Image (cartoon, rainbow, N blue to C red):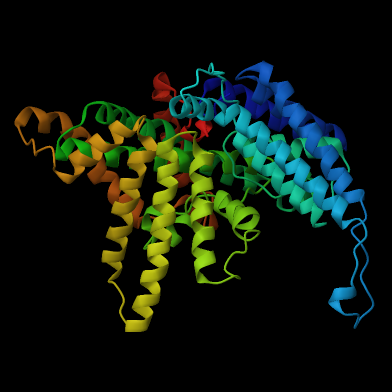
Length: 483
């Protein structure tokens, strides 16, 4: 079920909210949780009911593994002053083995659905084999609910998560505002909110804020992102010259920005109706002055997950400069593959890993020389680099990516004839309009901090909502549903 659909906005969302708070009103908190968990499974099954057993199987497996990790002894705290070499931890080996088994099982499930055909096709090409491709349909949200549960397993191992109630765990994984495309959650930041008494009572302040943020996100998605989508798609199919190639690349750059920003707003807004605050996941990434700053702003919970569960376990920055740079590259290669099974996604990850290494070394050199780039120069270099990397992220093949990059570099000519420019005028005007909005206006998170419900804001959101409904004739999925 899509957030940007009539059935969600006018039926599913209001019904689930009303029933949830009615049940809580009659002190049926456990039933209310069960209702919300079942509603979330219904939301997931709306796309294809045959994948509901898959997510239920994943939930059951990880719940059992998490419970075992919580119950197995982790050792004892030795007396003060006892040397570290003599500290023993009974059961630690079993817990580590169980954690490793659980994580590998999750990763294998992800590999099977997401990467099996990628591996088989490359094996056939390299080794000359003729293995038939599985042609599996990627289950919606599998990357998100898999990463969310891996985080739960690690937190359970570290005694940071304790969940004895199966209904609460199902709700943690499936809560529909975040289920399909994030944010990727930690158990500790999510479930305590459902158990607070004030979360079980209808809150007009949270409701008005939720409608405000949801309305902005809906407009971003269906009006702005989907309009850019048409120009991006046609451009990547046909662009060869300098101007049309840059228009194609920038159109996708802004399509992805407003699509993901729109989804994030709608997820946060829908959750607020239940008095649940999801973590910030998007913070004006195109304002970044370097790639490190970019990844602190773009898909923030994925960056956090990669840092906590890959970068730090690999050693982080604790084992020297060379190891730290290698760990950075590994993290971004994993991030590239997480987004998609293809060499273009892997190369996109490599570009960002390479950019991080250059940024690190450049920063050390500048500090040594007492030199600093002007902010506008740092921003321009970062933005152009991100746009170039997005070409590989969007391209359906390596040849398509190279064609667009050749056009952007001017190697295939500069076509400024009137017919071409007339066709490109609408997307160019849109880019000129939204460029300053992206760079200089406050984002949704900043507006949430200062939000006060007024008639003026109400009229603005009502206008954006009505405009969005007029664009429902071209309903499309969110881009991150594919990941």
